[in-house]
Image (cartoon, rainbow, N blue to C red; front, side):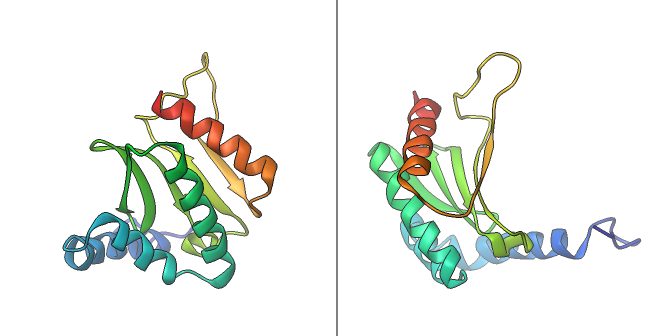
Length: 139
């Protein structure tokens, strides 16, 4: 990514910061679930389908999980701490969507463990893996 010599940030990074500012202005007034549904509705049709499936999957893991957007992405919280998030492929013009975990997720497994997954399809196997990881993350 080429960065702007004045700001040091790439065009994509500046767009993400603008999206975060828009969230702070427009989305903060909305309930978390409404924020997430609005964000999913803005995604491409293929990203929407995957996002809806993952959204349902994550919320089915525990009634303690809540939602709101985080840097323009659907995110899932336990209390005030972000546990995981869904990043649409279109977010950074990637060829795949990403499901990632943040520091509050209890996934530690020795000196190395995965914190994000590339996803192109929500198969039964993918759903089982993600559900298991989310359960471990909030344990």
